[in-house]
Length: 112
Image (cartoon, rainbow, N blue to C red; front, side, top):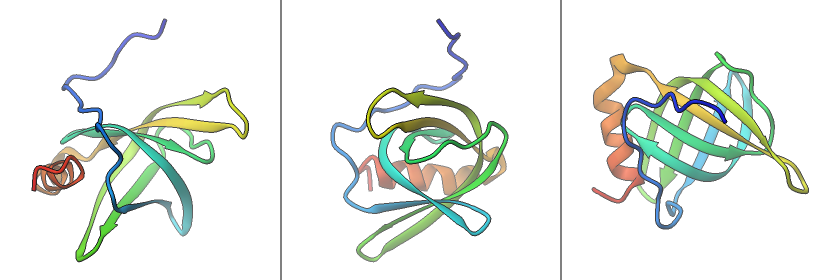
């Protein structure tokens, strides 16, 4: 069993956020299938393709008039055994962007 590396609690959304997520690496976009968990310091996502650890990402969220983005890097990844295959990724958000990260967290969890 892999050792848990998270330092902060994350919230598992009771239901998926109503908006759309866009995970970008450079000019390549990955389909975000689900938000697994979220905190002001990171987010777990189920996506359509593998991304290597250490890869810098941009994550955008849009819903009605709300549009926001956060930046980070892939801390871990894992293949989900299903057809078609999907992948879990843990994104560590940039600590220097804490105000944006907190706003993102509150928006995605419905606290705003």
